[in-house]
Length: 219
Image (cartoon, rainbow, N blue to C red; front, side, top):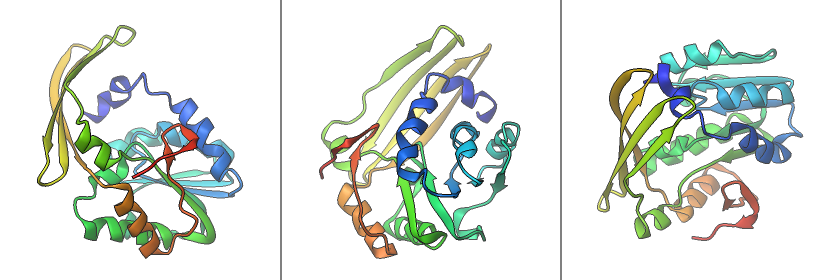
């Protein structure tokens, strides 16, 4: 899966995402990126900071990310809770990292771990689905084709309302290979995110639409 990850997500506009995020964290000298994957955000963010540390629990993902390493950046194969770094001016967790947290215990623990690795005025930015909105309007089955990379992807979501999860099965054809994988998304609400952030010690919490920071998101 990871050897084809960048091809699968070749249409993702990493440049624009970083352009939108930077004004909120650009004042910081150091950056912690949590769940960096193959390093596509990392290589774009790192030049803007004196030091960048990107971490991921997946060994294969980190190995790919290391091939893209920029000066003054370090990539570490570790879980956030085991990471020993601290005093970062900013942290990011992009592309739905928090969806992998299965229970309230793990959500709270994650937020506390982030807070403990920032300076007292540190900033944390992450993206996520609005759980209530997804439950009201669940994702639909879809097919995606990228003629430039010859990639065909069939996405088959399965909603579990009782457990508030969505499992998205991916059937992929890329570079002559066919395979399938799946991603589990925990549907956290904005209220649950706020409570976890406040419980960890974060203040001045703002929630906005993705890539539209001037438009507030509501519960």
